[in-house]
Each structure stands twice: as structure tokens, then as C-alpha cells.
Length: 122
Length: 396
Image (cartoon, rainbow over all chains, first blue to last red; front, top):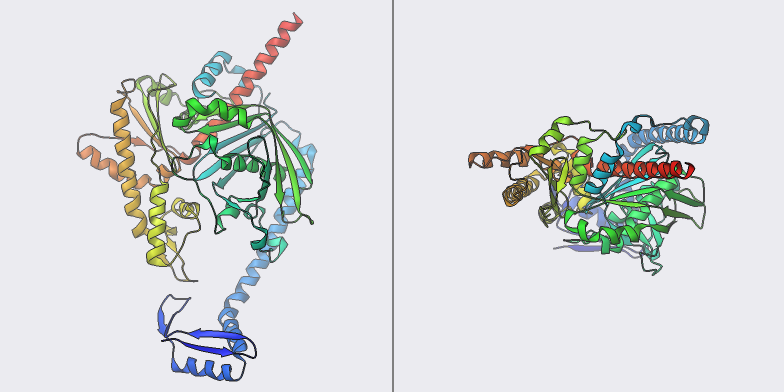
């Protein structure tokens, strides 16, 4: 049986099932009377929204601090990478060197190439 | 020589694999074969422009003689995979008749052009030699039509390009001068025997084996292409089959969705997991909850491996020309993924007295596109030499 709690003042509606899945572990739990009580209280008090956000806030907070520092690092690295790439692309003098040896292919037999093209492509 | 733009595209049912060579500078791409219609109404503005990866935000419109102009805008590749209305290839996909082929092919060329010329709002990109693949079943009859449709000028308009000011459009004109088509599987042989730079033979033992006969079985998404090689040339008598990994992927996706409450957004998402190896064979239906999905994957790969070997066995006994083939080579992305299962299944064939000893070359999934690059270079070289001869004749 599920109950519906609402907070008309803030236009927040929340359906409370009997059980829920813990999204961190995947285990199923009963909704404890304590939780119901808390929701009931905040629903009456028109602060249901704040309860949910407080819960989510504490749920996310630990992880977030860690992530942010690595994200910052990654962003820095990305920026450096961009600058490196950009520098490379613009320096046309560097790129003008021939990249492939053109001499070697002179040795290839044209007749053989034509046969292969005939056999493998069209 | 070869100071040209070459674009080689392995037109796969699961992935488009690309090698672009701009005046000898090589770049590789791969893009899932997925498109989805764009709907402005459901377009979610990126939270932070800077964080948007262009590859995951490819929104394109194509103006081309090959595509009926309905002024339709598509998500393609990784961007399409994330959409609810994503369209993947259907069974027995006739590549040359499907608009998706042209939408994806021209777009990936335009994507490459844009990455090489990042700051311009309008780009003209010339491809001197395009090389594309077709399955053996479609190669013979369709290649001429395919070439004609691909040649010419095609315009790709990228919408909502991250990092570009409103109205966020970049137009890329793709000029395709010449097209050469290769058959999947046969291309792999080319790649296994030729040096991509000098175009000379770099694997004498394989070329020698081809005197007695070689069979290549290229296992892809929706087709398995068998190619017989005799005396360093493909023999025409073997046909491809409508069989590939996609049906098995679909089974895995269905089972995981039903039993583990996790829905893959596309076959390519699953395929990437499979290619990454067994340590990645889990899903996370909820944050931090890891569910092992190898129990759904392994039986599917096993049954695919058995069927693949059955096809191999039938092919080797059905063709007189390569009846005495001494080497069997497995290539293609799907064969790479199921390598272990194929080897296990091969043991059973030996026990039954019909041994199928397969060779698994390195970079199996990339051999076709590498073969296309070699084919394109050869064609350029031929045109180059013929041009020189004409010049000499005219002078004398």
C-alpha cells in the first residue's frame, strides 16, 4: 500500500511506497516508520521540498568534493591539450615536411598494381 | 606522389570505421551506425557549452543529389545513440539504397574536415580518392551505382555546434573526385599482405599459402563474408551469408533489460563493453550497483561461434576452387569479440574429425579499412603513372 503526501503550498507531491530500492547498493528496504513520520511532519509544515533537497544534498556531498578536484584537473589537462593541438595545427612550417616517403613506391610494379586493382577493387 | 586527400570508409552495420589521409597525415575515426531524427522541441541545451563533446553532439542536415531533400535534421553516431528514437540498421540492410549510408558517410567526412579546419564557418573539403566497402553479396551488382551516387559535391550542415556562436551552423562542402569500391573480406587479405606505405608485399608466407588457397571469414554485424583467395587473387565462387553478431547482441540486450533493469541505449554501447573484455561485462542499473552480465553474454557468443564455424565448414566444402585451402583466417569486429568462444567451438570440430583451424590476425576489426586505404593509394598511383605516361607521350 502506498501513501500520498503532498505539500500544497509548494506544490510538491510525493508517493511513498512500502519498499524502496537503495540506489547505491541495489538492496530493497522497507520504508521505516521514522521516514514516514518525518515526511508527514514536513508535509504538514509545507517544507517537503526542503526535506528532499536536504536528503539529496547530504547524499551527494561526500562524492562531490572528490569529483570536483579531479574534474578541475581534467579540465586543466584538456586546456593544455587544446593549446598543444592548436599550436601544432597553426605552425604550417612544421607540417610542410613530406610525411611519406615517395621514393619507395617508385619500385612498385605498375602492372602488378593494375592487376590487384582489377582483382580487389572496382 | 600521393600528396592527396584519401578517405577510406568501412561501411559497417555496427560501426563506420574511417582512415583519413590528408597529404599523408593519417587520422582514424569510428562512429556507430546510428541515426535519429532531430526535434528542436526536445533539444536539451547543454548545461555548459565548454563541456560538450562535438562527437556527442553531431546534428546534421545533408544537401546531396543522393538524399531526397526533406530539410530533415538528424542526430548521427554517438549523439543519435542517446536519443529515444534512434534507428539502427535493419536485418539484410542494402547499403547502397539506404539514405542513412549517405547521411553517415558524408557527415563523417565533414566531421573530419571540420576538425582539421576548426575555426572556419564554411569549409570546402576535397577528397581525391574515396574508398568504400560493400559486403560480397552486394559488391558485384551494386558497386557501379554506389560509385556514381558518391561522386560529386555534397553539403553537410552541422547545427548547434558547440563552441560556435549562434546561429551555430557550419556548412561543409565535400567534393568527391573519384571512388573505388572494395569487397569486405578481400580487403582484409590486401591489408594482411601489403605494406600500407610502399604497397609492396610484406607477408610472403601468406602469399605463398594462397597458391593452395586461403579462406577468409569476415564476421560483421549482419553479414558474414567469405572470400576465397587463390594465387594472390580473390576467387568469385563464394557467397556471403545473412548472419552476424547483431541478432545475438539484441538477445543479450533483451535479457539484461528484463532481468537486470538496465536498458542499453544501443548495440554499440554493448559492443564497446564486449570489445573491452570480460572485466567490463557488468551494468550499473543504479549508481554503484554492479551487475555481472557475463551469464547473458557467454551463451550468446557460444552459439554465434558455433554457427560461424558451421558456415565456414559449408563454404570450404562447397567450392571446388578452394577445396584444398590450407589457411582459414577469421576477421571482423564480431570474430574479435568472440575469439575465445570460436576457439573453444573449433576444438569440438576437431573432436568430430572435421578440424577448422582458424588464424586470428592482429587488429582484426580494422583490416578492412586498412585494405581500403591501400586500395585507394594503389588507384591514385595508377592514375598518377598513367598521367605521367600521357605527359611523356605528348612531349615526344
